Image 1 (cartoon, rainbow, N blue to C red):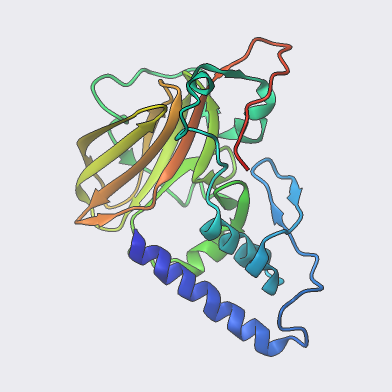
Image 2 (image 1 turned 60 degrees about the vertical axis):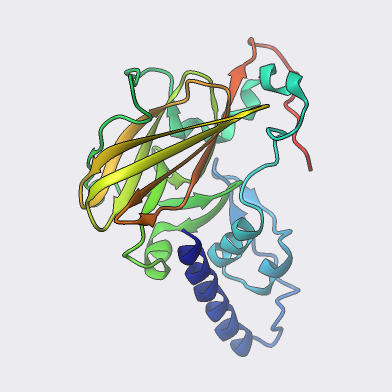
Length: 253
């Protein structure tokens, strides 16, 4: 996972260097480019070093590397936060990624992986962290094909971060270039942390499996096949407030 990120960073900055040579304003300070949010909304850039490129996907990737997910206070001593119900607006950018019905997973973290045909369900875009995105075709052109990848599948896009109501189901997609036994890991963080591990059999190539958001907290998921770890995906799970509630969830800025 660490080496994949390093390689990804190197690829990004090589691209930036080529762009700098070709532009009269090498810092790109006059650029008004932005990225697309998880809900399809346009996000204005405020990304520090990422303003050095007019490429929206590369700018978004740089921002993700610097700040992967919102800073909800999972790691603070504010114990009341973990029992706080949040309004629907907290979940609205992520509704394409979860469903309210599904089969409970008994005695494991995910359902048993099954083969996934990427040619029949290719995502339009992939999203890193808090809504910064990259066209899937561009992602595939710069990410090494031999890395283990983990995503949350939506109706049209994939993401590595979701905020979801308690009790919902998510569909995960894993790419394992080398199939075989896989260790799948989950850490759940609230005012205390808990972790679990289970071995699954992964098919070579793309796999799909269900995950149930059955506990409030920050769920961090990743897998290891052939001694190679994947990236992590993060699922923030909250209780859903009654209809009409306007009490916001706080995040630390």
